[in-house]
Length: 271
Image (cartoon, rainbow, N blue to C red; front, side, top):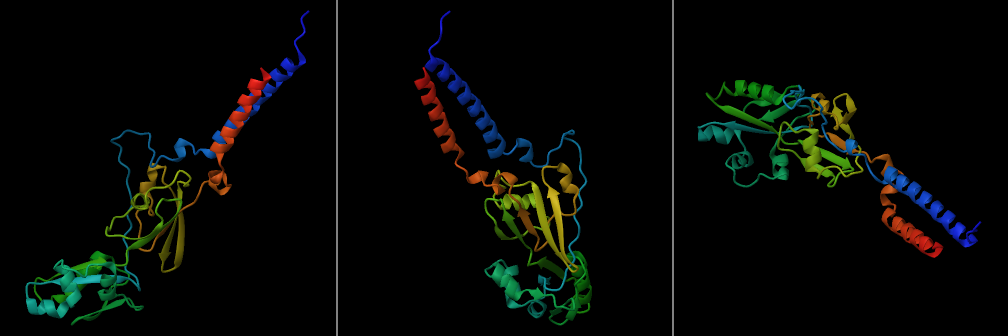
């Protein structure tokens, strides 16, 4: 019977142990440092491409504190001077004064009693109405003074705030009446890999703040009343548990390299 040297047996045991611990480390690394692909894909849907998903876009009702840009369009120059201030006329002509601050300063503020004070017409109640309803109401009142005048109303204070695990968090002014949560994520540079796709939305109402969570990995999210955003909505993307536990900042590459080098040395010396 031939006996193996003791150092050979020890080296083999150490090598097996080293390989075992290396395998365990790789499994831990894969489980903690990576986000599953299924949790990253937006609006997943397994049905046919031709399927149609119904969506709900709730109307926005004007409320006290809103800023409205109201433009009265008429061919009569004298009437135009009466119903539109200088800034409004300049903006309508497309020359200067179209920045957010200017529009905010020269817009019509909805008072606490729900009215806006307009030239000639005086106080006009618009709170509790949609933009379309308020437009029709003002046009009907202007018909007493002008024939064939057209009213255009824009909501000036349509801004949203995007926070959390996105690449460009911040406050954004919106120039689109149909702005969705996916638009907001895109505007903020998309989520990071550590962004939880269960997105939180805070919406201000007359009764207070309403909180909702929308799963943007599910295509059925487009049917939610929170899919389309409203003025002053806050979109918050929480970090995954991986990042909250600190794994995102852990130097896995350095540690893995050091362990690999150590195991190679052990294997070399064992032989």
